[in-house]
Image 1: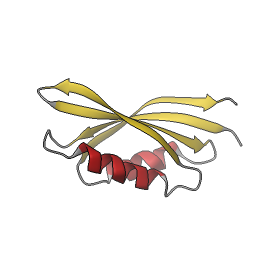
Image 2 (image 1 turned 90 degrees about the horizontal axis):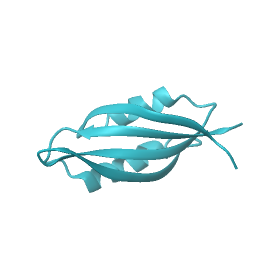
Image 3 (image 1 turned 30 degrees about the horizontal axis):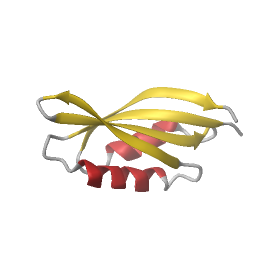
Image 4 (image 1 turned 180 degrees about the vertical axis):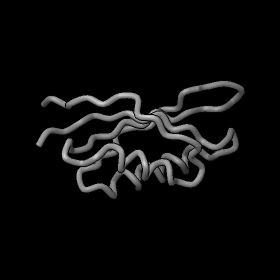
Length: 91
């Protein structure tokens, strides 16, 4: 089984969304998957005070990244989720 390093760009519903709470909920959602490992979540300025979260996770290639994307999109406060990078982790 190989492991994939995956990055998602997560847009909050608005500038008043608490990003620290959102990060915590994202971590919990990722870790519900058998091989899901939350690595980090960085804030990326978009415009007018709005910030996206760039979330990096590790996941077995046997599990579907679409299922993770769906789980993340169902979190309260998330407007959209976009897979921006998917690559096999070596080592």
